[in-house]
Length: 477
Image (cartoon, rainbow, N blue to C red; front, side, top):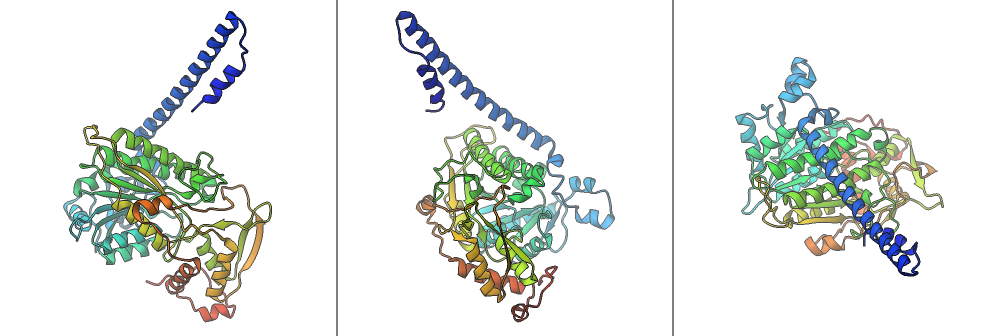
């Protein structure tokens, strides 16, 4: 039982004696129970107050939360006007042939076109972070099976925005419109839900990266906490009917957990990084919005996703770049000399898991009036490969595929948020929506390298001969 230790300690501190001693023990036990109850109430009140403050701050001061993410609109770029003013007044709908005024008739028509399913019973999905790695792949898969998809992305510069723009062009070629906008823009989100009746939200927008959190902690709070609240707020209080929400948590929430494989039942209260802490906070916030507003919410804990169109900050991608450029790579070992191991999960397997979660999400039960028809689904799942692999083996596969040895530098893993291993138990996802990862690491990396070589216009023969290639490479259009 929660706080049983407080009561037990109080009881053990008193020995039974005569009548006076018994009364004293009763008073102390009662005092311990009162202290336990008071502490529990204080904890709940603190959580509730924090959520209220985040909600108020998100609604009333979105520009402060998202100042580091917004991009100037096309009009601002052309006219050279002050960026802050243009950001608040206009957005552009990219992926169409021309910029369309945010909120205008043409804008709404384009949103409705992209959101409309092309199959009977199809979903209409708002995908945040649609120009990101997982977001772009999920958007393509949803569109390919006939679902309606509208994307949203702020194209921030955490990594090269040109790669995100290339993904955006790919989505546009398949009929998916991607808005150049931020999830903390509450007015924009409301206009989106006015323009289209989204049945689902696939919320993948987030500030990623474990180590970057040490340099820019506020961006993680703005995106992963305040941004999540912003999405929940509009879904709970503005959308009619409420959509079901599937969102990206992270395997990082397992933190310092040493039980393996990682199960959804394992403790997640010891995060090893700020990134992990914001994702754990997101899971607590999801519980609150599910309980209060009846939102159907599913959290997905991704395990080291890799593949074509991936993120350049991920190890497999950055190692490939360094091998081609003839630059050293850094490998981590634990204090006892063991190699770091990761449960590398191929993007196609993760996409199947995301779509399975959407298809089985269940309906939200709340209304704009704030009344619930009953409890709504609240779920969390691991999406991993179930086979941890030493990072050194991943490097060896890349060396073979690229035809060149890496210049390796091995160091002891620092205390900067990285963990020595990850290992997913996916039995719940397998049971509930048939998730079964099927891509071995060597096959997945081969597909990544094929894309990598084509996208960056590389000559593998020259790489194998030891000729360096500058990695300020131009991408293929």
